[in-house]
Amino acid sequence: MSRILRNTALLLFVAACGSANYSAPRNLDNACAIVAQRPAYLKAMKHAQARWGVPVAVQMATIYQESKFIGNARTPHAYALGIIPLGRQSSAYGYSQALDRTWDEYRRDTGNRGARRDNIRDAADFIGWYMNGSSEKLGISRSDAASQYLAYHEGRSGFARGTHRSKSWLRSIARQVAARADLYARQLSSCGRA
Image 1 (spheres, rainbow, N blue to C red):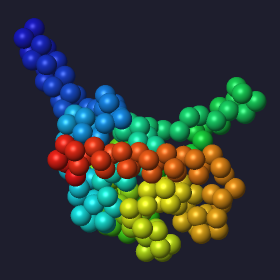
Image 2: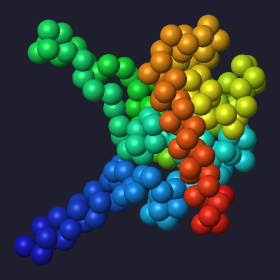
Image 3: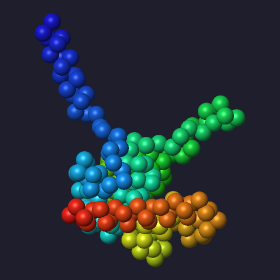
Image 4: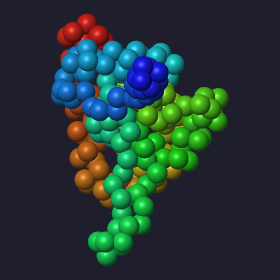
């Protein structure tokens, strides 16, 4: 009996070590509360900022918009005629909601072959990499959260073609991302985390 109990306890311990907490932090409207609850987030984003030049607040606002800080976020399922499942709306996954193809490009370009979209360090680095590329290829300031978000959402070629100009809903969301980035920057400054 004790052997079974010991093996069960060992199995539970190993399972607990391997599990990940993908839930969102409690207060998404306060950057200081987010990084106090999840210090690894700030560390990851500061690393990405140092590497790619994209401010922490811009990364945070993008992650908020894309996944609400839920590490294993996925797009909803699509249905034909409202009942026939067709699969997910896109391959977007994780904190950054990166698509399969773009994520594969990131892993090739950076040599980070083991990168995972549900890992905050990899997701922050991906956002930094993508927005740095948008800065270099499209001339968008790394601090311009609204334009960076538009290029992130539409893809660089879509942004260059101006696909966002006919989408008032998307331009409104981009303004919200910029406002949140400004809010997060002020909050991080006020609590000494900037």
